[in-house]
Image 1 (tube, helix red, strand yellow):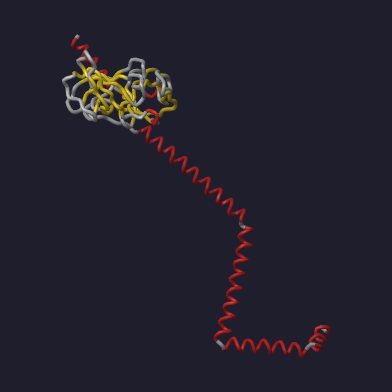
Image 2 (cartoon, one colour):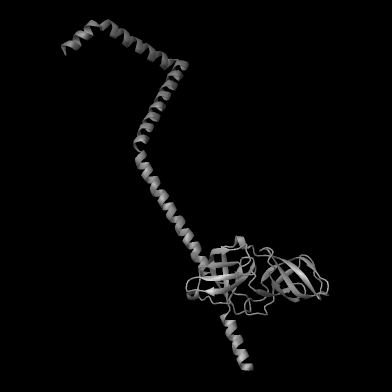
Length: 276
C-alpha cells in the first residue's frame, strides 16, 4: 500500500495530465460529430473482431461435437435411403397386372444375370417354382415381349428371349389388318427378328406395328412386339420376309413380368376334354 502511495505521489503530475487528456478527448468525442462517428466505428470494429475471435475459438473447441452430430445425421440419411430403396423393391414385388377380359396374372421379377450378344442367349431371374413360375410361361418387359421361361428352379428361373436360335417363335399379327404371321430370330442382331407367313398380296409398309396374336397360351393378344423396318418378297416365295425392329431393348432390361396363364390353361384343358 505504501508503495502504491509513493508511486502516485511520484507520478502525480503525469497521472493528472493523463486524466485531463482523457477527459478532453471524451468532451471532443461527445460534442463533435466526426470524431464521435470515428470512435464509434472503431469501437464497433473492435467489438466485431472480438466476437469473431470468440466465435472462432468456441467453434474450434466444438468441432468434435459438430462432427459427431454430422456423423449421426449421415447415418440417419443412409438408413432412410436404404428404407426408401427397400420400399421401392417391395412395391415392385407387389405390383401385378391384368389385361382386360383375359385370365392372365403377371408375376414381377428381376433379372440377375444376362447372356446377350451370342447365338444362344438367356437370362436368369430371381423368381422360381416357389413364386409360381413354371416352364413355358411368357415373359414381358416394359416395352413388350421378351421371351419364354425354359428352366425353373426353386428360387430362380432361366428365360430364353426372342433373340435365340433355339427354335423359339411367337405368333404375331399386324395391327392394321390383323394378318397373322410367325416371328422368329434370324441370328443377325438382338434388336431385330423376322416375321414370316404374311401373304405377298397383303399391304405391308415400313412403320407398321406388330402385336402378339393371342393364338397361343404363352402370350395374351395385343402385346407390343415391334415395328416393320423393311419387307421384301424373295423370288419364288408367296409370302413377305418382314424385318421387324423389336421394341424390347434387351441390353437395358432390369425387370420383367412373367405371365402366369394357369387359369387360361386350365380352362382350355377343360374345354378340350369336353370336346374329346
